[in-house]
Image 1: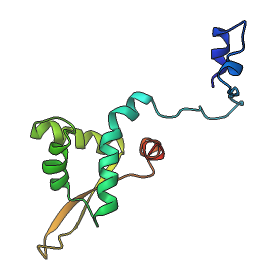
Image 2: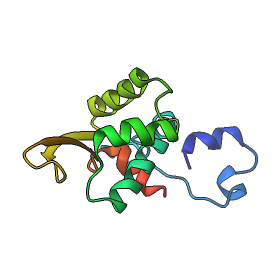
Image 3: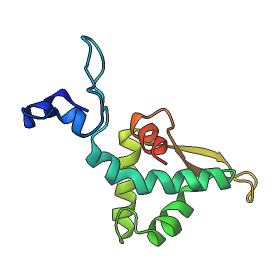
Length: 130
């Protein structure tokens, strides 16, 4: 709990009311919250669905994710361009990576796959809340 909340209850210590201890930030210590709650709320569904797919499939084809999954779960908008913009934003933010692999069905051809960047702070935060 933030020490700033104690100023809201000068007569009865709020930490006793909430049965919590104050979190005191030490000099040089990183902030307690590193990702904005608004960002977590915005990207949660996207990250959780992609995480679920990655746990069940060997790889997630980008076109399958874009055309079928995003449309079915209403991720990123209803139009083709809106969904591509959403994927591109996630890539630019570092939430996902897009890679090329050999197509297992059409030998000699490449395909693009989408992967969660599990080292990204936002992705870590969302997956830790599951």
